[in-house]
Length: 180
Image (cartoon, rainbow, N blue to C red; front, side, top):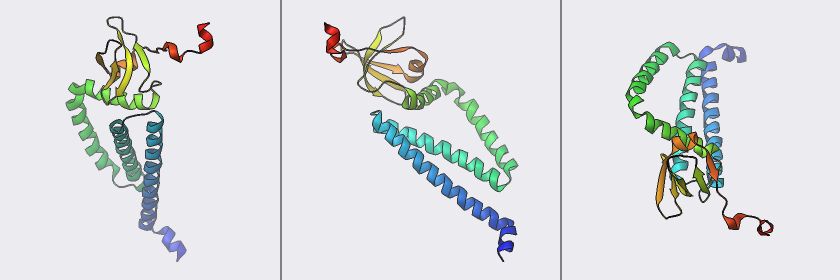
């Protein structure tokens, strides 16, 4: 009887499908907890954390869907033709919105790799203007700075990743022994 169950292709696919679903749910749960912990450690706003979690969920779902379809051999040719058509249309339609997409992508990158946090005093290496101040928020599209003169500066995420950024140290952050 056990040999019959193992030889039955439909049963194998069902068990493999269940294992893949359990793996996906586990992966999604662990990834979400990791992102939330990282957000707390980096003092990221709730809206930005939710955006990154939604992006992670969407990407992991698409990845899971592709693995599921390939592993279970569910007519990948028809599905891939349909998906490639959708991506081609979306790619052409969204090409005009490249700036918005690059800022959203940069927002996700800043979430994971930007070494500065809210409250840090930074200066962006921009030869045309004085882009410096204390980071008061990092949104999906902009890093928002309060300049020393009180003005609020919104700087696009994609540009802050392309330019050099210097952390400015305030005098009270220096070691008191350095003042002698």
